[in-house]
Image (tube, rainbow, N blue to C red; front, side, top):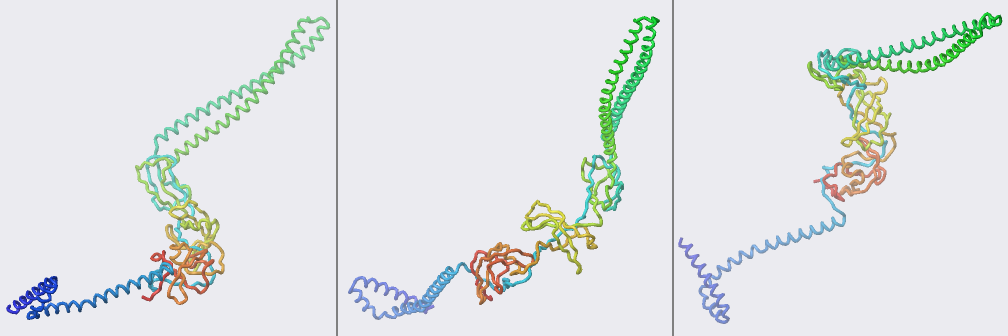
Length: 468
C-alpha cells in the first residue's frame, strides 16, 4: 500500500511540474528560470518520458497497416484497370464447369419424344336421351361385343311423346290414304264416263245413219233426225272435254301422289326415329372393345347427351406425345419415329398433328407401322421414342449442354490454348438433337468450349479458370 502511495505522489508531482513548466513557458524567460529551479524534482519528469517511449513502439505498426492498405488499394485499382481493358471477368473453379471439344462427325437429325400409350380407336358412350338409371348390367373394364346391353334408362316424358307422335303419324298416314283413295276413285270415274260416252257416240252414229236412210222414204221426220244428230254432237263435245279433264287430273294426280308418298315416307321415318330414341334408353355397346370410364349407379339421373363411358380397342394402341413448339414447323404427317426395346426396333409414323400450342408444346399422335406393335404395352404407359426430322449429314459438332438455354445458341465461352481463361465468342449454331449441336460458324475443330450452364456468369465477357 505504501508503494502505491509513493507512486501516486510522484505522478502528482510530475503533473504539477509539467503544468508549471507549461505555464512558465508561456511567460517567456521566467519559464526557463522556473525550469532550472525545479531541477531536484527531475525524477518525476523522467517518468513522463517513459510513457512517451511506449507510444513510440506502437507508431511503426500503424504505419505498416497504412502501407498495407495503400498497397492493396493500388493492387485493386490495377486489377480493375486490367479487367476494364479486357471486359468483365469472373474467376471460376475449372472443376465446376464442363469443357467439351469441337469435333466432326455425323449429325443425326432427331429429337427424343416421350409418348403416352392410348387406344388406337375409342368410341364414346353418350346418352341419346336422358333418363333415370334402372339397371346396370356390366362393370367398368368389361370386354363387350357389339350389341351387348350396358345400362337401362327410363324416361316417362319421352315415352308419352313417342306415343303422341305415333298417334299423330298414324292419323296423317290415314289422311293420306284417304286422299289417295279419292284420287283413285276420281280416275276411275273419268274412265267410266269416257266408256259411257264412247258407247253413246257409237250408238248415235248408227242411229243417225239409219235415220238418214229412213228420211229418204219419209219414214221419219226431219226433226227427229236433227235431234239425233244434236245428241251425237253433244256426246262428242262432252267426250273431248272429259278427255282433257282426265289428262289434267292425271298430271295433278301424279304430282299429288308423289308428294303424298314422300310425306308418308318422311312421317314413317319420324316415327321410326321416335321409336329409336325410345329404344336408345337401353344403352348397348356399338362396337367390340373394352369398357372404360363407366361409373353410373342405379337411380342416377343422366342428362341428354351425358357421357356414360367409352369403349376402347383392346388390341391396337397409339402414342400421344407433346413436342416443343420450337419444332412445330419441322414436324409433318408421315414422319417416322423409332421405339427401341430389348434390342428390337419398332417403326412408327405421325398420324395426326394438333396445331393448338399449350404451355409451349403441341400434341401429335404416333401409330405403329403394320402389325409391328410391341407386345405387353398397356394403356397409360409411357414410351421413349426418337422422331427423325431430317437426313443424317456430316457436320462440325459440339455436345448439347445447358448453356444453350442461357445463350440461345448465339455465343459460347471458348477456352484459350493455355487453358487459363475462357473468352466469350459469337457463334452460329444450327440443328440440335439430344446429344449434339451442329456448328455453322464461329468455331474450329479442336477448340474447346464450356458447355455447362452459364447462369452464374451469363453477363461476363471472360472466365478466369483456376484449380481452386
